[in-house]
Length: 112
Image (cartoon, rainbow, N blue to C red):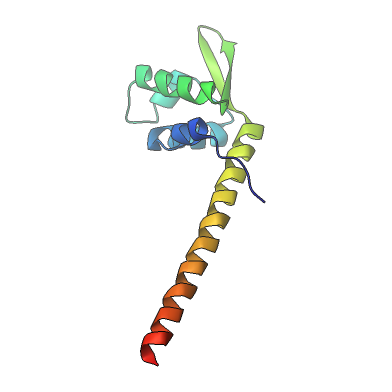
């Protein structure tokens, strides 16, 4: 199965702080920039910027919650990201198997 890779999505997920934010949102069932900044080594303003990136690629969605916005992970978009990762992994597994076969063939020909 081949899945088209969304570069913007993977650029967003490529940042370790944003991955940690996704983990926290998933484990806590959502959160605000304030609640996330209390659990991360970055400022609330930095968290808000990271949430903006995640929102633009559809990994989170926000709803008003008092004076703040509450963010939750979009599970359908997360599933899409996982499918892309699985597809890329399978492609690289096949490439690496082929490289191994070529290397073994070269080794056998040199031993003969």
